[in-house]
Image (cartoon, rainbow, N blue to C red; front, side, top):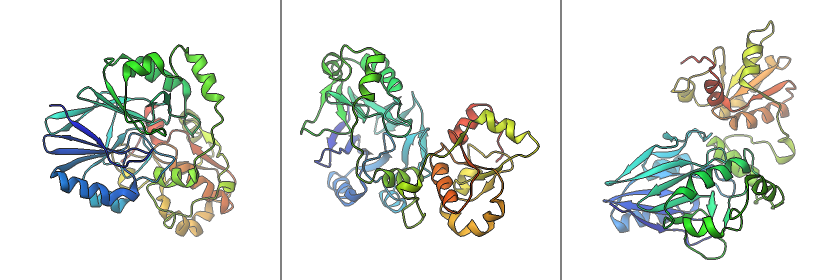
Length: 345
């Protein structure tokens, strides 16, 4: 079965409704268009099977907990996503069933670490990885131009030339392109080596989107500003990081650091587990738990979360409260597990 794909927003920031066999997937929704999406689903008489974000967005706010609940469908992102709101994590090669069709996942890190694309019925929903004549920027936190070049040239450009590409953005009113056109004519990729692409992306000097820090804090944490005292731009200096290997060595030493896990309780005891000895203080409880945490103010603290994003925010909040020896576990529990680090549940 070949799904139908329709763009719903009518703006440069695109949301797609993919429909097959009476079921639908909503891809890259905007939170301020929730009523539009629900009305469109009702008008078409289809059941929403999946809500999917192709990556952690920095230019708009993703769905709230309430909006996700109102849509009533599992929320899907790549396994590298830092968000605690995700119901199903997917990896490269996974597929999501949709009314007799499927959405195949291709991991395409580069724009963000959790960027992915979806292939279905001769079409590619490319997120912010491949745009029409361009590519997603790679200067956001965790961006990697080399990884993006590899993913595009070795994975996406090997798809059939006639594959229709539905991009996550377009600022010139265009709707689609094809893999063949992008492989031959893209101003970013065509005729460029990997080194040339990396140099080009480093030279772009693009302005940051408005309120990019707030968008990332909300989208990475799943919390609203009123729920967490997010640090201001001037307070959010880069936090010192510690690698999983370095942390393992420190935990075996004479003065191990305090481990502060800022995930949700269900994550702490869930599939990934937690590093033995960790204190669980969810991010939204950090402010009210601060008086008790001040007892550790003279200790080294390593802040931990799923992928290293929420913990960076928590570290900035701790610094604002007067803590001085704070480190962020680089890559979070995902990286700890990948390094062979033991966990408890």
